[in-house]
Length: 252
Image (tube, rainbow, N blue to C red):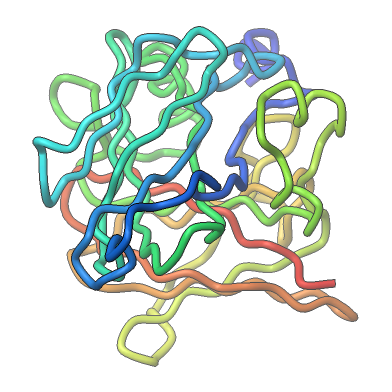
């Protein structure tokens, strides 16, 4: 694990930033259900000090023709169907593919975007966490949910520079729970990260990060709890091979 730590800049070991849909005015009628609505996002290289991931492709799994490219500053803008469940996908050569389930109802809705690990780093982290990957090492064999519990202020980030200036935004001491169909998932135990590395001895977040792995297909809900705090929750649709990332924002 020390070798893994050596490859990470632990100040910002994982980025799952809150950004907002584009504030640009929409054409008349664009708020109708099914109309396309612009969403802005950010993408950085996992394990770095928020270094951008330019050239990465962002798309919508349900409508593959909807695509965008991450620019040199790590920003992108993509149009997604309003008020429909959309799965945003990010792909880059030499990096693991990541997903984020989202539903956009209006401009200004907060979105979650990505900190993307290289295949080499993803393989090392998966090995440390005993998570089987597929034969090509490009995705988990089953579904994995990767959550970051973050401070409320993270909703306001508009750029990677904003996030750098703010510093680490993860919430420590939050415990994650997983349900499916309104019932607790048997034997589902979150694995938490410390300094960017999975640590099975932990029972709550240190830098805000926790994962559930080895999940079968289905719809899951992830919640966080901490004494004196309130958090959002999120719903994710699992399929084999999906690494789904999402932020859980503090309401305090």
